[in-house]
Length: 74
Image 1: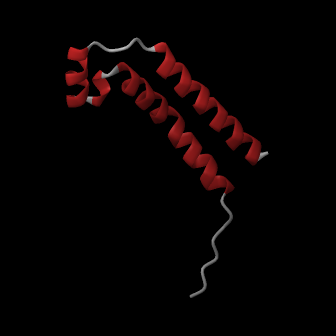
Image 2 (image 1 turned 90 degrees about the vertical axis):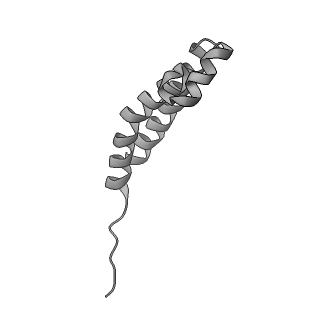
């Protein structure tokens, strides 16, 4: 069940990234100078960052729950 959850989260993230990249218009040359100064000014990078801020904590939490307990010998 947990493997299915991780697989579905991965597929969802891929589709979201493809949607953000293909759905944004190409920036004008003068806009690229602004994007170099501030990554969130570029609509493609800003969209990806927004998605990652939402999805990454959930994916980390799911991975931590799935990880086997680590028994360290002292």
